[in-house]
Image 1 (cartoon, rainbow, N blue to C red):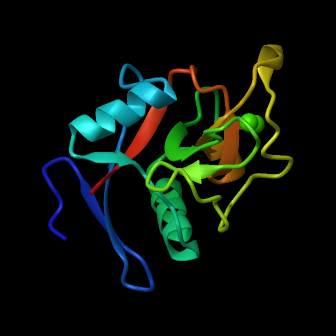
Image 2 (cartoon, rainbow, N blue to C red):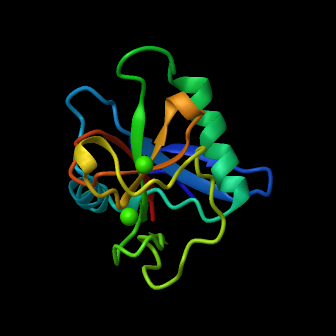
Image 3 (spheres, rainbow, N blue to C red):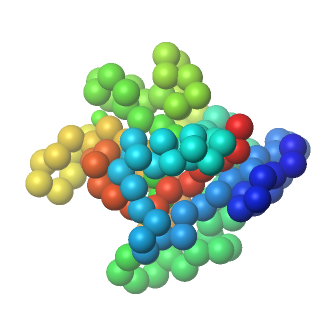
Length: 148
Ligand SMILES: [Ca+2]
Ligand SMILES: [Ca+2]
């Protein structure tokens, strides 16, 4: 796969390839839905991590390229969501299949967070080495697209 301008090529140990685009943070932030629309506009979608190899590859890339300490440590939307609001998570690429290969941070998914808001959208966050956390979908933050 040839990556379009702005996308970075990653190759897993199993020779799966992905072209990803990581938000620059700061002003480059969206709600989950807006991030997915933005990724589609760029010719992709929020990143789908449907294998252990892809999960590990992205985690290593983020750990190598983004500082994890301090206030504002990176949080990135990925392409998983509890679409039906029943605590069953699906990838944007297949909203009718439950996700089976997961990488939840300790005590996640919690389904509730600050101010008791329901959490249905999935992020990876630096303070747990980019393991997964469910979060309120309207929160505006950085995101990771993949080319499709
Ligand atoms: Ca939920
Ligand atoms: Ca959570």
